Image (cartoon, rainbow, N blue to C red; front, side, top):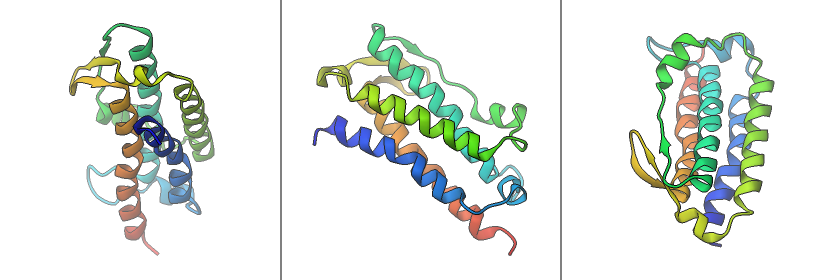
Length: 156
């Protein structure tokens, strides 16, 4: 398997992991903040969706444009100003899964050299398409550690 194939497979596995991590939780548990400044499980799920939508756009721009500027965003402002406590978890998970499936299928159509194409991220600097895929493949696991901790700390 090439590094791109490995990264895409890992990237595509994220939605199933997120679904499993959120399984069996009711609305109150999903929206409960364990401590001040902590995100709820629902906020983590919506953040993963928000960041994925941005990452898909960044990936497509890297392939379509010459060294595009990839603008970061303030994830905490999204959580603070775009409340998600009334979002439907099933819709969030379905859209997250559909976006990842769409993006993984598209990535598999690209020639190997496309994964060496670059963009300039406003926080990370120069990044390749392969690096972006790897970052977002790992992003789910990063947040699932928080989700697992939150589940352990929910009142029984």
